[in-house]
Image 1 (cartoon, rainbow, N blue to C red):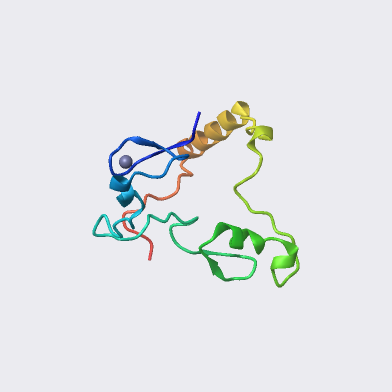
Image 2: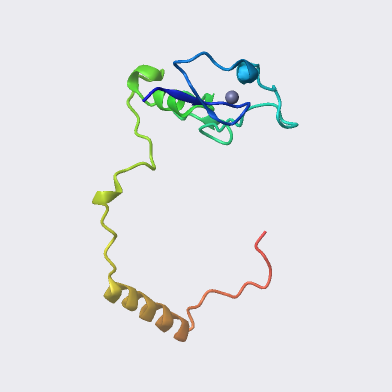
Length: 127
Ligand SMILES: [Zn+2]
């Protein structure tokens, strides 16, 4: 099967092994530059605003440049840093709840209030 290309002029498919039809030559004409009032491509950056590298104190808008400063070769300290927030969560174990200790703390607090050792109620904000 011969390779074909969809024509932007007539909407049909033209065989690339044959000369392009003369009446469809506008297929190769330059496209209109602006199709909207915002004549620029939509660019999505790594960050919505520049992020400060804690390794060298400079601001970066590119994630690759920022991560380069975390390498020992990319910061003035020559120290390898770990980016916090991208740890492996598959090994995460949630902390154990000690319901007995919680209950004891609550009972101590209730006993303190019952014995009159409650903190004073604030009737105005501390200055
Ligand atoms: Zn055509």
